[in-house]
Image 1 (cartoon, one colour):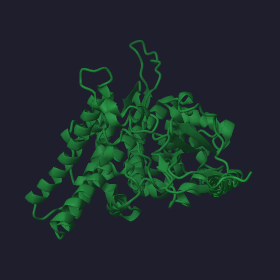
Image 2: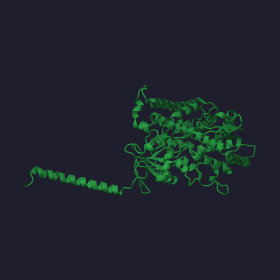
Image 3: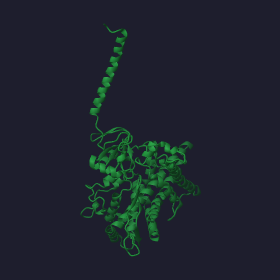
Image 4: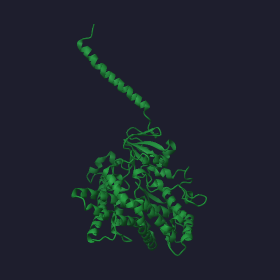
Length: 506
């Protein structure tokens, strides 16, 4: 019997479909076999990935442990997000610097927008708005422009010393005032009072909540359950909504209050004696049409807010780490003080002109940056296209984390890495080596910190002035016994010291 007409038609229809399916399946298998594998990493659980294996409060510790097992490039899954962790400066430079076209985007962090942190362009995706913000930032903070801030930075450092001597118990406040005052002067032409300045207090309150939650690891909860932002206030779990609203209000207040100050200052002074990032750009903006002015003003506000947030938190935290090191390592403090005395004598305070003659002080600054990096993972990058590195496939849209902590604690590079040893940056002749942690702690590639040179000058001026004028030592009880203490850190996008038991002597 021959097949019926309908049967023959069915066969003719099925054959080409089958051929297409078989061809597609063969190509899929071939591609699978030829496609490079993902970087090595821990075995993920279904749906959850590796999230349960991660130390959510201090993820850099987990990533550093995984480096020992999997190498300099580790692949991790956090729920549905693909994450590539870089544990080597060499690899970071190869990808973030040399392939910056691919690695300059940012991942979406679920907490950034709800908590009001979109005012900081550091979280902005790689695009036109980010480029404009970066250009405004670069005009003010590029290396040659940053030089003109030095007299002001040194003056502010000496004001900080007066505050420390008068009130040594509130050292964190004095460090924060110093850090913020430099940025407020440069960005808004605002001269804060030496203590309890209202605008600086606004900055402190603004960053308090957001710093803890604007990281991929901390944002997982909101990514999983976005409805938490819509819960009624009386409902369990609504605290995240309240915190988000408080944080947003504070960030907006910080941005708008400082900006309005500059606008009023310009209106009241037809001849400006000083210029700042905002005043210079507001003057340029007057030549634009209304639509362009509105867009430009929003971008300028973001660039200015980013400068204030970055200066306040990172510089303050580094100075706290420096104070901790001086308490725990008094021999380092004495050696640095002796070097300063040999250069300046006792008739004057050190100045920037002395910096090249103070290599040990420079090594103390380097070791402070390395010993407890205040941004252990920096701000995560994201890939804008697929890439192949060292035979491994790195997919488009992956979050790329640069493990600064792991690099700074590499025992092969830094023996006894948990100890504070400035001499590691000096050769046998006392000359500084080429190893400078500033090369990796300030970030790499197009997303590297654009305020690095001003920040470096602020840190050096503060550290050298403190070494020349005060002593840090352990606090003692009424019987003269040293009071034992354990340094306490809060973590988020930065890692900052919140308790330090010490005394300061003039």
